[in-house]
Length: 624
Image 1 (cartoon, rainbow, N blue to C red):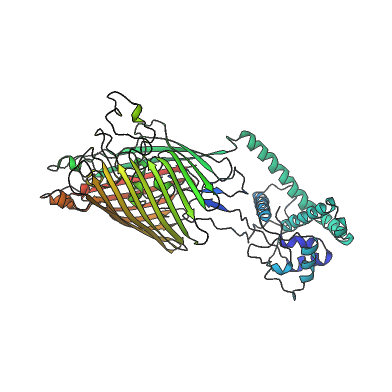
Image 2: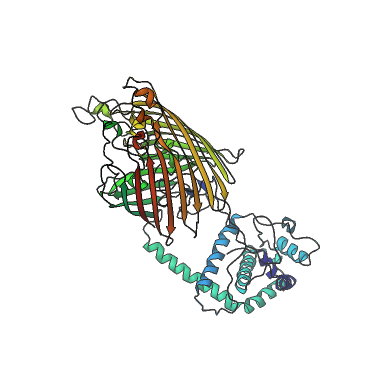
């Protein structure tokens, strides 16, 4: 139970008078700190924060933040409880009040005890209650102030607050007696406590009865819960979508994707994510425009988030397994076993639009964040470091290998991964390494990113894609940008990017990004490819209602900037594939949202001879 500043006023007659006159109480804030360890692939499925050492290992909860540390919460306006509430009332307000007391009590234990009344910045020696407060602090030590070390003596209090404070001081006196320090307890104070117990007997009985009831309910829940270390989170997307504008007509389709995540914490400071997925969502078949051949088909521009990472036939599979932890107070590590991505640990600096391929942000993969984070993926190791001497700055570094589980040196025969393939494994196949320096302060954040990667064509049997998230299938950008227009060619990649956001107000967030990627397609013989991408977005959180989100996005998906040099005489292929997107997510309930939106692709395939692509979508997202 919380130690109110008022509690000390309950153990002497003088202070009791001060209580009734000033009506003051204060709550210690729930200051349990949390440490950000991840940028989850779906914010509704994976916690981004892991509790600090003092938190229970069962209290890891999903949180969305781009800030390095969540702010402390100060409880300064408690829920009012009717003074005349009967002792046997089971009203929701009373339970809420009791829950608040419980939370504040846990927070009080995390705060340093006030040992001198001079530590309360707004209490002065000229205050009429100063001596009473001073005596109680030094004699009984049952006062805890606000986190800012204020007393706020003019606050009003309810009878339930008074009863809770009285109970706390009774407990403190009992502690002193049990500790053989009874000489510290004055006989007059004990008499006062006895009178107060009689006066507030009904309120004290109500509080204790409700605590007993809550303990019984808690015991029942513990017996029936799935696990003491694991929590289940889920997201289900239904999307009615269609594409217009191409020579090949697509049917209007109803697509779905389901993600179920088992989030396990063993120590309260770590997190094991095991995510299962299924769906039928596949990319549209845009077909091939006449006269340009396979260099333009299929297009991957405008790919939507629910098209990313599924089998397309509703088969259930494990699509992400990873472990997060902390090395000390300032170093966090990320260890993915399956389908790790760079934005799982590195901030993307797109706090409003990025839903980590979930169903609560932008419609498209491109609209969420800088495509540089999609260069490669798989298994590996990553670290994020924060220096307390440089507040706001973070440094992230990570290494991911696409096919780390394959040991081709032991394989024989003409199989898909046969003896003719180059070595795979953790270090000898496709990989991507990322380093990023980021800064977040107030309403502004910026990240500078470098990626070095090798994209293997697997011995000439599979296509190579640069922006694939480790899946070998382009997730964004043109075919010329992803493969230089040719199948089964390996590439050495060096990418340089910058991403930033600026909060223009409580309900407006501006973000933008820019990247240049140099790709040397080693089996091609042509000059190196220069790939460019950039974009800007406006997000409107809580537009019209809390939980809603409006978004406007415009930019160029990754495209081959020197196509005119690499493909002389084919000027149409040097066109910029612009991407325009508008959506509005309406939050029906806490767990259901509906998002209508449209995506418009100009010059798809970076070819001006191709018709524009217009994609219309009505997405419904269920989270639990």
